[in-house]
Structure formats: C-alpha cells, structure tokens
Image 1 (tube, rainbow, N blue to C red):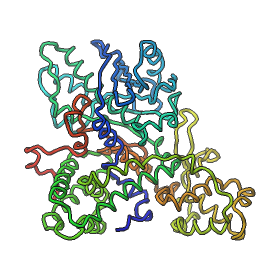
Image 2 (image 1 turned 90 degrees about the vertical axis):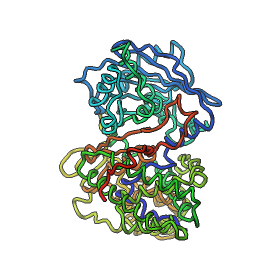
Image 3 (image 1 turned 180 degrees about the vertical axis):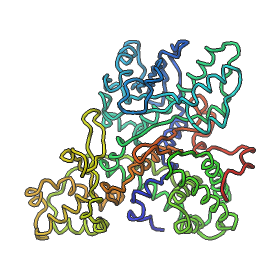
Image 4 (image 1 turned 120 degrees about the horizontal axis):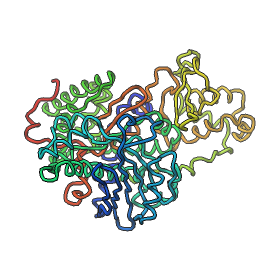
Length: 564
C-alpha cells in the first residue's frame, strides 16, 4: 500500500481541509498526562468579587512541575479586541517552569499583563492573553447565579468562554528557547508547552465563571454540570502571523505530514478489521456527523464547505450500510471511493476518522513529529550542479505549471510589519514595501534558481555556483532537503492573487487539534481548542483520548441534523 504522493497531499486547498486526528498535539499531550499520572493543583486563588486577581495552576509529572500563572483583569468592554495591536485583555498568563514563589509572582504581575510591552525570563516557557466571549460569558455567569444551568444551544453555538489572541513561546519576549527544553520527554513533541498552557487556561476560565456566579449570589449559585462543563473549549483567533511558519520550517512540516500519511497508509493496509475496529469507526462517523451539524461559520466559503461535509458524511454512512466494510482491505476501498466521490473537506475528515480505531498503529508515530532543524540547515556545496538539476526535476516539476508572466501570479508579497513585527501580505503592484519582501515565494524563487543554473555545466561544483550567486542559497538549501523530506513544500504559488492564507493557518491548527474552524476573512480564523476534553481534576478517572468528537447522547442519536 503506497503512501499518498506529495503532489496529492501538499496542495494548499487540501492542506486547508485537514482535520484534527490522533496525532494532533493536544491529544498527544493528554494521553501522556494520563499515562504518566500527572497531578494537578490550584495552589493560588486570590481573585476578588470583581473577578480581578491571581491564580496558579500546577501540573506535576514524573520529573518536573509546570505552573500556569493567571492574571484576571477588569477590562473596559470598549478595549476588548482580538487584534494584535490591542494593549489590554480580560486575562493574561505565563507558563512557569517549576513552582513560582511570591517574588516570581510579583515579577510576573509587573510584566505579563503588559504582554509585548513587558518581559519575561528563561524561567517561563510561554506567555498568553485571552478575552471573554461577549455572547456567552455573561450568560453563563447569570444562569449559574440564578441556580440553573446555561442553555446548551448557546454553549454549542459559541463553544468557549474565552478565546486566546496569542500564545507565545520559543524564546519570544524573553521566554525559554525551544532548544533549552526540547530534550525533556514531556516537551519533545511539538508545541507541548503551548498546548499545556491552553489546557490550564481552560481550567482557569471555567473556575472564574463559577467564582463570579458564586460572588453574585452566594446562597443560590450552582456550579456547571460536569457534562455541560466539558462542552466549553478555549477559543482562539489566529491571523497571518502563523502562516509563514510552515514555509520557514520545512523539515518540521514534512515530519508532521509524513506521520499522518504513514498512519493512513498503515490503516488502509489492514486486510480485515476486527468487529471492535468497525464499531469504533462507525461510532466516530456518527459523532463527526453530529459535530458537523454544530459547526457554524459566517464565512461564505466555509459555510458551503460545512454543508457539503454534512451531505458527504451521510454518503459515507450509506457506504457502511451497503456493506463496504465486508470487502478485503475495506478502509482502502472506502478511501479510494472517497477520493472520487467526496469533497476535499470530507476526504480529509475521513482520513482522521480512519485513524481512530488504530491507536496501536498510529500513536507511536507522534514520536517522530519533532525535528532538529539545525542538522538540515547546512548546504552541501560539494554536490554538482547536475545533481541539483536532478533533484529539481524529481521534486519541483510542479513549478513549471505556474505562469509567472501573468500579473496575478506575482500579485502578493510577504513582509514583516514594523509596528508589531508580525507577518503581513502586501499587493505588489499597488502598495509600497516589496523591497522588504520575505523569501516565502518558494515556487517563484525555484523558477529563478532554475533560470540562473541554465548556463552552468553539470560538472560544476555547487559551491562555485553559490559563490557567484549567493542570492539563491535559501532556495538551494530547500531543494537539498527534498529527497529526504518529500512533504516539506506546499506545492502552490504562495504569491498568487488567488491565495487563501487561511489554508495555511488551518493546516497548522489541525495539527494542534483545533476544531470548528470559522474564517472571518481569507486572512484570519477563529477556532476551538479542547472542546469536550476532561478537565485536569477529571483526567485520571476518564478516558484521555475519547473527546475529539463529542459522544452522542440518546437525544442526539435520534435527532436529524443533516441534509441527506
């Protein structure tokens, strides 16, 4: 059974249809926390009646502890904004390496609420901020203070009480560099510190809303019912700042996608699934259908995709009813049918669903999703120009399909804003700044490299070529990666007027484990994290990895949510 080719997988439109899976980083984290019996404690809670104050949540594992230090603020609603230019938030956070003492808390309180204007230290791994959901936060506080549970329909429509507008790590604003903690087993997988930060922020958010309800009506207030409580995730608003990551970390991107494609290959090769494996798949399919029924998006493009997904998942159900799983290698049969019959959104949803019954085939692949990118940074100048041409022919033939003579194919340029040091996209032919262009136009730069190589003989050492043309070093470095890392490049023109940057955002966020993507434009998207997951105090007594698609209760099982 062959893996899907990069030519199939690495198109922006398909990457922009990826869904969370068993390999997503949030799910890897919770499996580890449960397997290793991590303990959680809320050691500090000095939040007053206005909801202002400090809290500390400590997670303790076999070797180390990590503490979320949270600061709750009384924010003027007029100042609440998801924009990166905001200067105040409802809550701000830092993930402390260890257990903070009083001096640490004072130092963090003097800096963390300022975010970019403050500085943290190498004793912190992440810094974050979040704002309340205007629609839902007050409704939940009011409901609980009146002794009743909030409306489930409103919870499902929004999905979170707070949404983060940034979770910074890897050395930003003074935080610890990734290299200083990458050898720790619990942080070896990508973005584990960030995922732990968000997981603990979720706990703080639910504690805060229950605290405010209790303050409002001490004698009458109730806490959230556990099943309802778990329906709250953490929201997130993400813009262009995330998009260049996939281009600047090609080896990491390869390792993420390669793990997912290897998992799919293994599952498709299963000759005869067990009855339990068939049951698990059928169960997750029904969950996915219900989840799609609750997926709301105001963006016209995504709204139509969700409607099509609902129809397509019903078609998958009919395939099961017609006995597709009775064939030899049924998962391969089902996938090959989907390739020709379903939308990209549904095809990639099906990929995720196919992995669910197969923890023993899939989960170990998470161990290979990190990357030591320093090892791949050195250029081998000893190879010949002829060898470089061979690699270009084998791995970059797709570049020849792009017409760079048309204005629309070069319409965009990527740059970094001076004010916020955040990636931005400009219009090349109508806006200034292309002299500040970042080297993210991979396809165009590969074409330029090929043109410059043309007069050089095959026997010429590559080092001699680069001595004359150092402007192509970044492209040569990328090309040399291709034989060992075939999924390292997005095979599209990323400066074309038709580019949808949200495709890049969604690809990365799917590996985080995000759900309910709701683009607000072609350049920023809202998502939900950890919706349905057990809370820290529940983790040891509940399955760690049975929450990515909410379970169906008897009422939902009989409710038709879909277009047949």
